[in-house]
Amino acid sequence: MYSWECGFGIRYGKSRTNVKGAKSMQELLCNCGGKPKKANSTSSRTECPAMIRLLRTEDDGWYICE
Image (cartoon, rainbow, N blue to C red; front, side, top):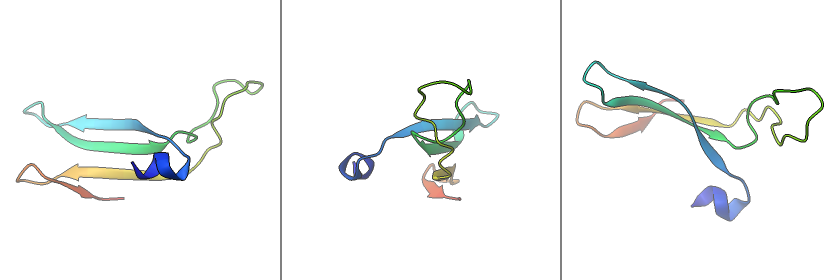
């Protein structure tokens, strides 16, 4: 996996499902993205803006939206 070879991790962010219950959107985020829950913590969260948003096509494929 590209992220592992380059030394960073990814995690799943928000997702959405359609009325049929199938996943229609998925966000992949940098492991360091977001803010720590507490101000004085040893969290690795550094507000990294790296993100990929995937949307499902009508033929059940995926494409990168953002």
